[in-house]
Amino acid sequence: MIFASDFTRHEHYTPIYTRKEPLENFVEKGGHVALAILNNTTIVGFSVLDYPDEKERWASLGGQIAMELKAVEVLRELRNNSLARLLLTHLFSDTQLEEKIVYLAAYSWTWDLAYSGLCVQSYRNMLICLYASFGFIEYTTNEPNICLKPENIFMVRMGKNVCQKIREKFKWLRFDILF
Image (cartoon, rainbow, N blue to C red):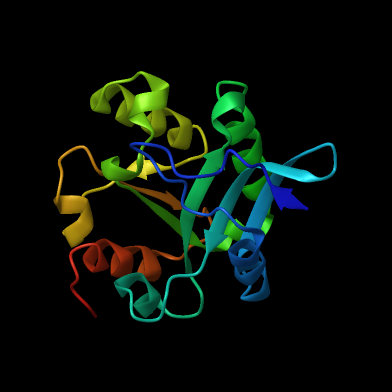
């Protein structure tokens, strides 16, 4: 399988991953990857769910409790066809995620505003609507990259089986307070 050739740099936008090797690495480390494949040969979309790097604050929850939704990407020409929603549906069909806290950080400087034709606030609202349909809720945090721009988003999907102690620990961890 290969990536579609249009997963390349554009004037104001660069897709996060443009080769299959990083996606394979996520799976090898225990992460989850969903792919949209055209004609059984060409990757035209993907989503990535992975554990945080051990140096990130979220890893301090321990026990592989937290996972990050690292990417949801669809080939420009195939957007607005519900592929992102289908990729997320596949990722979140894993019932083991009810034992985990899944978070995402959406940085406005990574959004493809030029192709979408949306202003930054409209793009932000579109993302919030998409992720909210999978149980994500927007939360505040003092994470520096989120705080750089007011349009950046931090959202969390709390698995229904996450115990209250971990929920409380995560609440404080959002502000880099460790217990």
